[in-house]
Image (cartoon, rainbow, N blue to C red; front, side, top):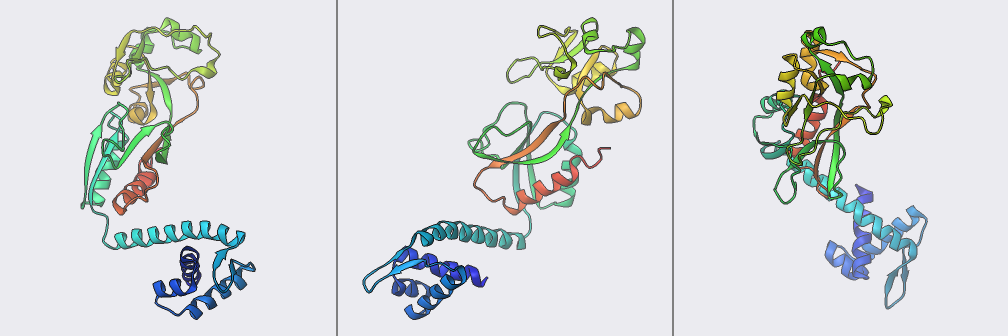
Length: 297
């Protein structure tokens, strides 16, 4: 902390351009300020000020240090503020926007609430693109990257899309051996409710023709409906692994064409850039990072 104190003295001198004025702000003598500056210059091996009987001004090295010192002191003050808040404990309301799906979020959120009962959760499940700042959310959880430069993103974990079908469906139809075989199958498809666009199945690595189109046996605009129709043997669906893990383990769904699906997709938690997360949000971020995909094999 002695180095931090020296930087504070330096910044006061640089901003007031006076040892006397800086000493007055710090409650010490001008000679004491001069000694601190001299010691800092000796420690850094660089002259920070041009001094004369009438003025004091920064050298080029001093100007560089001033820019860095301001950032350092801002971070130190933010850290002190955050630590002080942590002493009071994580509490208060958190307003979070999440995708319109249950798992993997509901289990993790229930555990979070039990672990931190003094944090009030206000959860908004939606697939539309919310404006986190204008709509007053503390944070938003979404799949994919954070495209908005106003947001800071924290990686929470990854999921994989899987092509699945019920044993009953596969008993009535030949199991597909290539992505092209899907053209002869009943496909349960998803339409994004906020845009009206159809979801593209992640089959780019399967060598399909550019004009390849999947059949539309059923079109849904939510995850639960697609899972239900797949379990009922209606057709083949493209579903996230976290939503069907238990169905796969118990044999109610069968994973097909495992080599045709692209790489995993990420979940991120985002909040407004330039803000240090307050204790309740920091606690929420740390908990989700540790627990959201904790049960994945």
